[in-house]
Image (cartoon, rainbow, N blue to C red):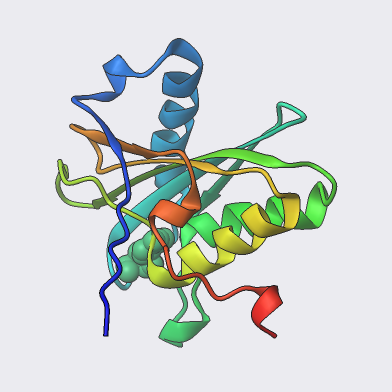
Length: 160
Ligand code: THU
């Protein structure tokens, strides 16, 4: 038996004010997109902004359903829209802001496991890493150079 160690690296910014001008602008769009969440059940709003290599910014917000599993996370709303409408564009960066509707949240909120798997599909397909930025409603912003830092043991088409 031997052990393997996998390390992942994130950058931590004290606030979005530390981001460069362009990235801050897109994170502000993700924050704004939170207002379009349809989340009457969890009352937890998530906004996502996806930057494509054609300079389009695609926005998404979580969409819930009375049949709970039929709802969809903000990240997948945005990235599936990008895939459906710009199938040849590459996803360069994905920004996430999340918080309960009745209070601010300082904890950076990472994408859930299903969203990681979905984002990974696009990273593999385009063979260009997707940068991920995530935060609560204020406070620290975490940044990863690639989705792989969030999902090291990735299931992908080569395994099929
Ligand atoms: N949610 C997202 O939109 N993205 C995530 O990565 C985690 C969770 C949504 C789903 C649901 O509408 C609410 O947050 C509470 O789980």
